[in-house]
Length: 228
Image (cartoon, rainbow, N blue to C red; front, side, top):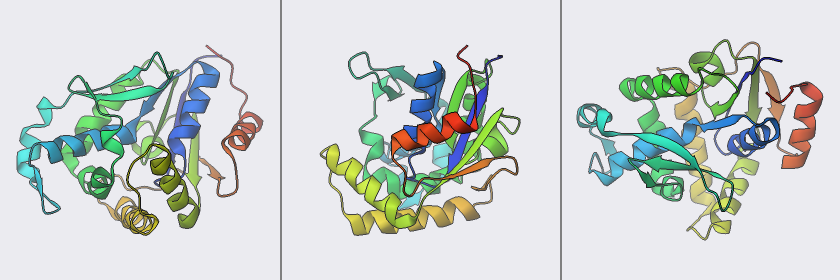
């Protein structure tokens, strides 16, 4: 079987990255965390004073986009992919509430999306990749071989996000996370540039009551994919 492009879209905090990583590991595919890329741009903007009082200086950010270089590297100790911004590992930094509060606002900027979509398409041109995000199956790779749209109830997503932050030893408030998820859902679905929506040929996975292992059982029943 020829290598495939697997696109996983869906709402924030519904486990897209965990699912995509598991699929990539099973198939021996590369994993591209597109959400981490937008988070990295958000972190760059915060670190460089391009966001003040929740207001983004869009012209200044656009003028500095060429300074932003995002790569992924596998941690030899944990086996996990990690996000690097301009040569520095920022995997922990991009998961903070401060970044979560602004990432959807950053993602609506046309110039940012154009830059990152171009990078994502370049990363996936050889296929044998799994990508997760908001518009992979509708915009980045509309001809992806496999398209999955993930969802879960807002309450379940908030609790999962809370548990994730607590496990990492990071500050967390369930109420604050719930508000952030509601805000991001609204922005993601109503933004002008490639809003979050289900591709017509995507298969829906509601994982509100599923474990990661049960998700993989579902995937294996839905798709028969050989390793490259």
